[in-house]
Amino acid sequence: MDEKLTIKLNGTKSPLNGNERGGEIDDLDKIANELGTNKSDLLNNNIIKDIHIEQIKIWHGDFIDSIQFFYKVTTNDRAYLIDGNKHGGGGGNETIINFEDGEYILAISGQYGHISGHGNLDKLKFITYIPSKKHVIFSTNFGNNSSTLFDMSPAPGTAYTCFFGKCTNRSITSIGMYEGKVLSSQDKQLQRISDLLFPNKPYNFPVLEQEITRLKYQELAPQVRNGKIKFEELTKNMKTKAGHLEKIVDMLLETQKQAIKSNEELIQGKLIAYKDILEGILTKEEIQTLLSKQTELNQLEEHLANLKIN
Image 1 (cartoon, helix red, strand yellow):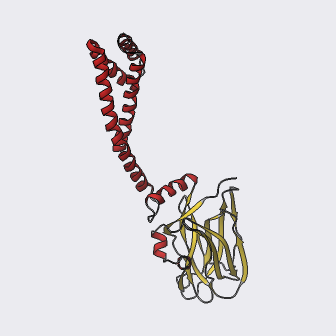
Image 2 (cartoon, helix red, strand yellow; image 1 turned 180 degrees about the horizontal axis):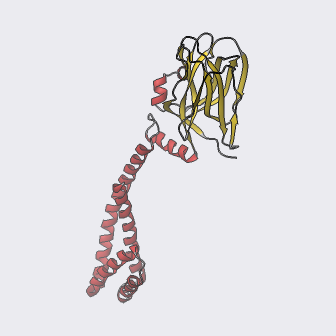
Image 3 (cartoon, rainbow, N blue to C red; image 1 turned 135 degrees about the vertical axis):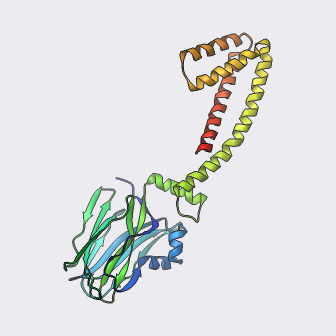
């Protein structure tokens, strides 16, 4: 079975689809109130770690009389089951859509009356997806009237997470949805790192990457400095011990630099020759230690240089 995906609010709202009449309604206000905060903080301060729609209730006849969403919201400290407000009128037949674990809305389609002062949201159809089953579900059409068609779908990699719209005391007149980024296991790991580094800021990969690079540079820079000092001391000691063959030590190290970047037969031959010459004075272990330290230092320097470039 596939893993359950996490959905993070990203602050993006879909266009409002429907007739413009009626008062504004927004379930994020209810969620914010339940969490003891406000809508702005929810969108800007990384409070919600995961949000899923658990159920939708729709009351309908010739049009959509009313609608109610039910949510599971996870924060840093716990998970909350939050009932959105029932929006709209009091008539119609009730239909319930229950969401499976991890199921989320891929798209919504419908129809609405466009006549100013009279139009309602006449039809609704939800298209959902269950990751664990790789299964797309099409709900039935709710409502009967034929009017202006609309289709709405979130950006790639996102899902619809929270309802807003307009209504009267008799009907739903328009619908919109907040988008949330669908996070995989790797995304969630990066999210946790981001939360540690920036606990009060939304996840932003470029910013996270920049901060990790900065921290890594701070870690590597002193290692390179200390590595250079130790390698220079080791080289000096080896050259002193080599006596009149100290130039061969320099030639050995220069050839080793070339060998790190190229495995050409000529370079390898020179490397073996210089080792053979020095083995008359230095032990094999001493020569190998010198070359190993040079390779380690070279790798650290390259890593540090790449961090500067990036």
